[in-house]
Amino acid sequence: MKRTITLLAAGLLVTALACSREEAKDAAGQAAESASQAAESAKESAAGMAAGAQDAANSMMDSAKAVAADAAGSAVEACRAMAEREAWGEALEVCRKAHEMLPDDLALEHAYQQAQAAAAGH
Image (cartoon, rainbow, N blue to C red; front, side):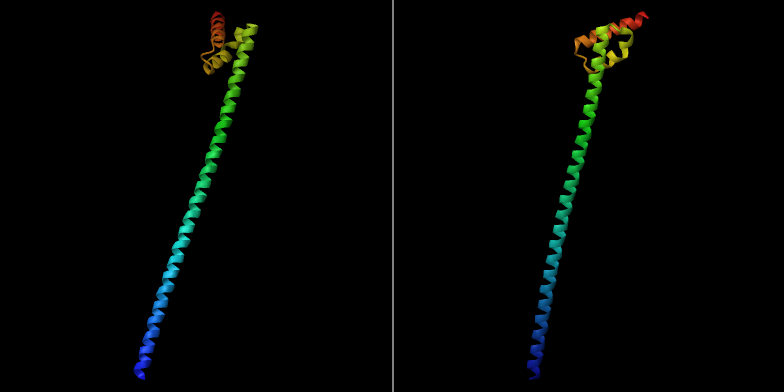
């Protein structure tokens, strides 16, 4: 009887240890899955932040291009207007900027040359 109780106790102990190991394995598996989910969430968050930063950079670049285009357009228009009035004394700096922005525009190049000649004559 004593031997049966000892065997029964040993069986219960083995069962308890086996259950503890299974519980430990389950807990470890759940911890690993939680860590994996946290890593995936962090990865998605970082990707979202990177995309937001790229969008902001693109927007800033577009704004800078628009400002530069407006400035170029203003210089070109001013140079052409001064050339039409033959206001060469006023046109030198404006036409220089316009010619730098559109170096292949022959009318701007001519206006710039006229403004240079007028400035040299004064």
